[in-house]
Image (tube, rainbow, N blue to C red):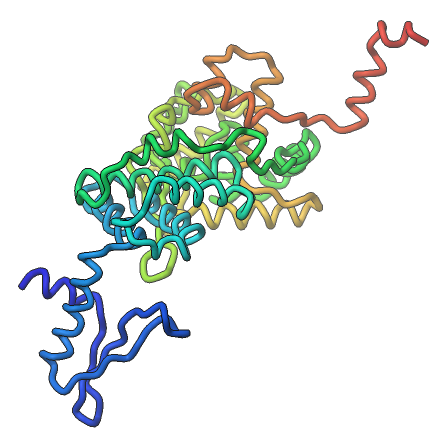
Length: 378
């Protein structure tokens, strides 16, 4: 009876004015993707639904198994709701057609062929392809270990992928797209200090700490140490869908283990840190408006607005983080210190993905003109 109720809960059925009972059931052969089933009694329409679901259960598709696998992970707390939503987006992007494939008849050769075609078809980066492989591997592991639907290993199959670094899509981004240069940074900070409020203060704190925007809006009063000029990062904001609407909540851990850190703030910002500390003494969160915590969305919109007001290209809050990392690396600081400030597990993340040139052309020309060895070639 429990299984029967589970099947029935997945479908909406109703009684028409003529006394007949109706339900729409999925059908890929129909243009609408579904077919209308009618019966004379409520029990008979329920039986039709159960019969359909049992047929699906006996021959599940990749789509069925993906959602069962990841719902199971979500129910057991293995992944967050935001992670679940992200994996669903990846699945829907790639598995529109292939997701209808029967798991029991799927072969490793078909899987390899499918995955290799996704890179050129969707112009995937290495990171995007890694996400696709992750959901594919975990879904098929679930099919093999939990359901016994397949007897081959997805891990071994993926070792046969004919994919190299040159196959991935790489979009070249100019330095000016990735960081705020020195003049832009000064103009933004000047505007913020002249117009202090919760959103602007959150943006300024990002410039002087390099924190992720989700970490900033999750800060609590106790995370600020004005005596030692330290900001503690212990949590972050997470976003997920509820009834197709974005919901923002605080997750009691940062993005990664390395994200747990105490950020040292320059002493010349001590007054700013003290102001944040005392202003939030009666609040739960450091940045609130009318008693409500500000969200990443509000900070992002404010930054775009400031960029527009001062006449520079709009950039996301993450570009502030890249700007901060570039400042630290340009200052030739100890690598471990940079990693700790940024919350990275390796210096490669800071150097390869965040470090950008922030100097304007005139500055570069002054530097190059000042090299005596080049001047002596004239």
